[in-house]
Amino acid sequence: ALEVPEMNQAVEAYRATVVRPEFKELERLRSLARHNEASALEHARQQERARWESVVADKEAENTTLRARIAELEAQLDGNK
Image 1 (tube, helix red, strand yellow):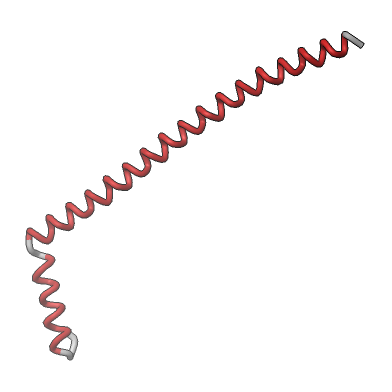
Image 2: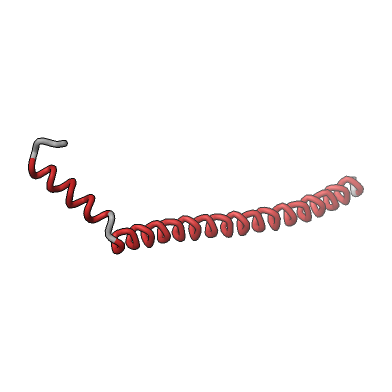
């Protein structure tokens, strides 16, 4: 055991606190809140990732259309030579 009376009192006070039902419930609620926050952040990340994947796919489709139009115009220019 510790030889400092204040430390012994602090340790005993801590031990008395952590066994109380109110303390256990508080820790359970804190843990649940941390879990909920982490879940919400992950969900937001997934939604943002899906949104950007959609934007990229739309731009790739647009670029495919643009490349096809460029090829048509180049073919017309080559035909007019």
